Image: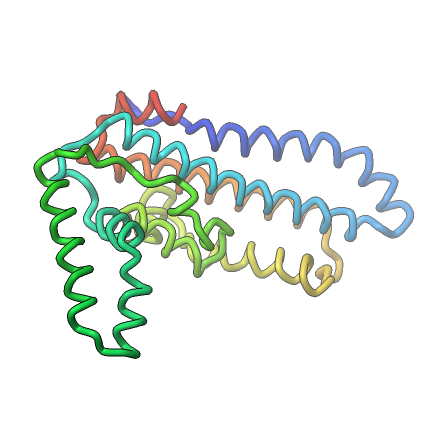
Length: 238
């Protein structure tokens, strides 16, 4: 069974297509009256927001696929297990307290509790399930070059740029950095690039499409190479 577009990718493509259809008649009027670049900038910010929606939906569906597959303990991605344990046991807060009060007894108790949870996971009792998607997305769902590697490490993908690069034959980090810099300049600083044209706008949207396509295909291949069967993945994602 081969790769299929995810539901999130289809919706992303639909939203960009609708935006282009809506923009066409508006741009003619705006360009004629000197406001074409500003109109394109506004639509660019909208398009980038759809990239954020894609990331959120894709992560949610990926976790649903993992839950549906219910892989054995030794098939779960190491980094995902680490994040689940770290988050559920609130270890970060305990280590911060330990760095202040050096109460070794308290931190040892928390570590022991975590160790027992790992032991119970390895036996399959209780069943291990992915945490709520909001926990994985927390503070990382905005698609910036800094957030994306951290988000996908939580999902067990150690080198997201390598995954994207292999799937799309591109420098995904460089592309996302460029796309994000333009969005940040427009949305936070009110800077529209001089001469920002319809050709430029279409080129940027095409870069977004290529990036999403590579991420979608790359993560699919990553999980289906050992953690989840292709049939279960396709069923949950599409």
